[in-house]
Length: 308
Image (cartoon, rainbow, N blue to C red; front, side):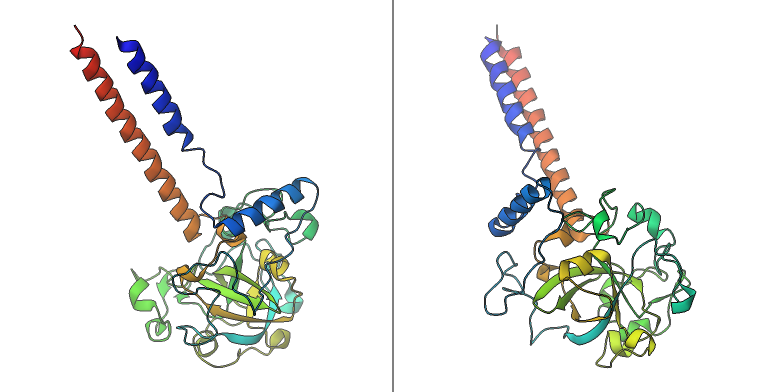
């Protein structure tokens, strides 16, 4: 009498377990999913680069969220306005010091004394050492390869919150927890170069300045006179996604999470809000499956006990 129930139980277990092996692109919209699968095929065939995410200003972009920005980050009537035509330079985790340019080694960030360790290694800027989805080819990064630096630090010496930070940072009150915990680290920004657009997380401070809040949060131009008044540092991933050369001009602005569309900037990193969300969802799904298995086992045992 117990055999049919046992077969039913095993089939149910197999179906439930299969839900844990979902399509890695299942959480994306259909247009982005098709694009990434197409690029997977190209990569396996030997093509190493994404062609860049084009921003067609005459048409809505497929796959962007329809909560705050139905097509892309807003041009007007937005909480955070665009900073336009900002000289943009390239930096990377593990970059050696350059005394001629007054540039320190990038082994630590302004908010992480073990930045290179947290990332998982050297973020080699050589295009031949990078994959189609803009990460280093030798490892999966522990943090988002789409990172940037802006010239304001809300901390002093990694240990305490800088006096005055609460007056200049727009979201300070809603994110502050304790002195020494940055409210800026991992904030998302949109970066635009020509017809291309990508998204990155604020993970370091620079170039050159550490207290240029009138530019970062206000309407002023960058304070520094170095590197042609550079006001934004971006990672090799951002460089490649935008087809950008160091010293080129970019527009940028802060964005809310709901404005960040699907793309390679959402794939990697423990600091990445979308990776964190996916992990939580997977854990919740696994817990739900396990709870269902417990109920099925209890039902099976109860059935078996009821048999003469």
